[in-house]
Length: 314
Image (cartoon, rainbow, N blue to C red; front, top):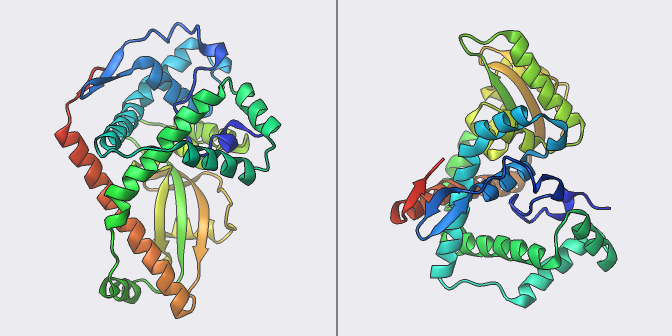
């Protein structure tokens, strides 16, 4: 049977209220944000945090649950506001998703995970979702992809001059790394830092995705990107990082290690050795496009916020 993450790979994390949590005393609905004439409720925010965290909250106390959500609700609410703004932009631009596109996406998911129709529907049932709910969330995800492609991705150009300049400055080996960082703080003891790192390791060994754990535990700005530090040249890394990476294969996750910044756990996503000119050029083109896209996407989101009425009521 396909897991939640596998089946719902194309869907953002706000999808449903598991039956076991439907009667939770925390789920007292109220408006937590207004985005133009639409509202975001606490139940939407709760579902987002529950799903993305990957934790089984039936195994934690009510006090622990409240603390986890209180610590993360502002970041999650920002994500929900950005999503709502993008969906509103798509509507204003008259962008839509046809039934044919939706069905093609569903067939693509079934093919990717080798699902029969029976497996697909049983997986939805196991997650407490109807096919109508699934189609609605998948349709929204396709809509988000369309509006971002039209308003951001299609407008990005990487010139030959930029490409050559990048290549001249970025030769040799480099690494694509994700990290979880527990920061050194003035009044923080090493024991409490290790306890937090051990929680991350426990969740990773249980099979939780590194990006999800980084989002909820890491104290580095990269947490919002699932811990992604991007591609870093070998000579830009400190000795502690290089010592750890030298013992890793692509896909490995390190044990916690110390630097002057704190306690780190890293995942080696890619090791890029110096290659022939055509390979390097293609890699550089993709990297420059990715950098430009990230900057343009953030700028577009800022412009959506500037033109909208957004009120946060946490």
